Image (cartoon, rainbow, N blue to C red; front, side, top):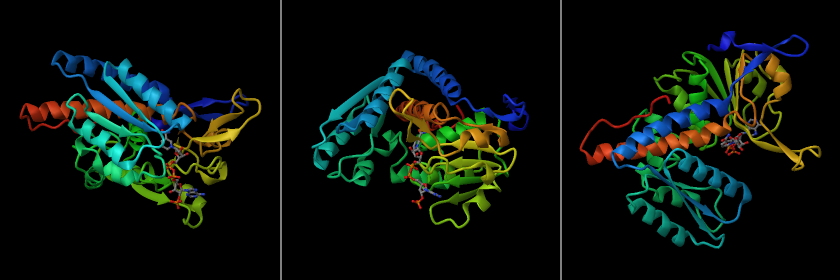
Length: 322
Ligand SMILES: NC(=O)c1ccc[n+]([C@@H]2O[C@H](COP(=O)([O-])OP(=O)(O)OC[C@H]3O[C@@H](n4cnc5c(N)ncnc54)[C@H](OP(=O)(O)O)[C@@H]3O)[C@@H](O)[C@H]2O)c1
């Protein structure tokens, strides 16, 4: 369905932006991947994802457990290596190298953040780029920037692009404004949207803390992607009617009425912005579920590409819409 025609109505009869249901879209992608994995299994290939978790960070442990469950559900191998917070960089690198050499492992992910004695850049550079399903190795970052499609794009921005495609949002020639320039979200998001490719070909503006007059940029946006990690940064006076809003932010705000004493919100003042938007992602259940779906997709691609290389086939499984 196209963005322009998809709206619903609130209790006062005002038009509300249609919700982009990230959970449902991610579910479809995962179901499709499970079929692909079953096909690979018939050729004797079981895609394997190895995740290394260092330390006891509770949020990291939750993410890692859900990645493992998702792998198993899709018929893949999900291996988790849990290391103590006292692990040295040399010890971690030994584990990474062992996974690089393990033919049953097609994708490697080291959960961030790492304890302070370990340099994340050194660890990322130690991962075999062909197993770097997080897309953070400089080789994959470079491939993404120059538009070489046999690399891996980072999962969250790849998931955002997929949400746009699957929601019928036309990006061609559109003004897309990003808030945030991190290596994990903002910069790779911009690189994806700039390619001469489906779900791209946009005119991209990247904003950050030093951007002068942020609202003057966001008000021009046909599509606004917020990835700042600041609750309610984007308010109704900062957007133009009909805008498509993708809210990447995940922020904990205190809420004594919630069972855990907090709830998760995005960077967008959802209730007040939604009436102006044509489509909008919620938090949670917007971008979040897409990140894991894209991680599985990258791992299946890694396995497919390795099989093609072993068989001497040149046709690489390039990045394609799910
Ligand atoms: N849904 C998911 O799966 C997923 C995945 C990853 C991240 N996230 C969430 O997305 C958010 C961003 O993550 P991240 O890793 O990219 O965070 P990050 O590394 O902290 O980067 C935040 C970016 O936002 C910019 N920024 C912060 N405040 C701003 C302001 N007031 N005006 C303009 N720009 C501002 C920062 O600018 P400077 O560079 O100038 O500091 C920075 O570039 C977080 O809430 C995170 O939890 C969600």
